[in-house]
Each structure stands twice: as C-alpha cells, then as structure tokens.
Amino acid sequence: MDKLRHWFSRAWLVLMVAGVVILLDQWTKTWVRQTIPDYTAMAPIPALGEYFVFEHVHNYGAAFGMFQGQGNFFIIVAVVV
Image 1 (cartoon, rainbow, N blue to C red):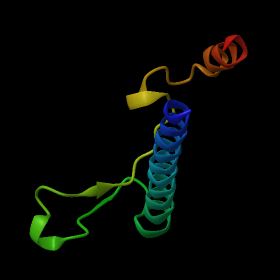
Image 2: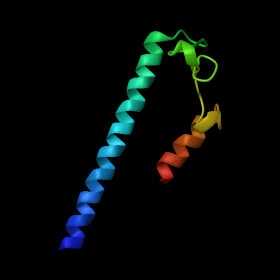
Image 3: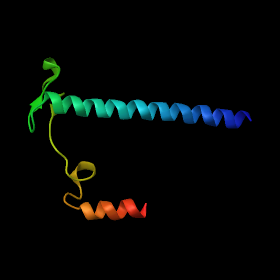
Image 4: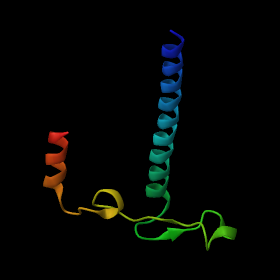
C-alpha cells in the first residue's frame, strides 16, 4: 500500500510540474505574439542583449522546422499512434 501511495504522490508531482511547464510555454508564446512583431528580435533585459534575445519566428514544421509542408505525414502518424 505504501508503494502505491508513493507512486501516486510521485505521479501527482510529475503532472503538476508538466502542467506548470505547459502553462509557461503557452504564456511566453502569447506574450511574444502580442509584444514582438513578426521576424524581429527584442532583448527583454538590455544589459544581456548580446546573450539573451527573443526572436519572433514561425515554425511550420515539427521540432526545429523538420518536415515542413508534410501535413499528410503528420495525419498518418496521428492516425497510427
């Protein structure tokens, strides 16, 4: 019983952390869309401008722009999975 309780508490923690990460991800995407014009960059902390810059770009593919224009591929993968 203790192992099951430990597993549930650990699973709850993982779900909470994942939820916070997803919320932060969506919040930053919304902030960038509303604040930075398309295809431009902005340094939110001017002193770190050379090292820390947000750039508003569009990714029309999967991770890192792979498979751009391959919508049918994603449909097939979604159906199979």
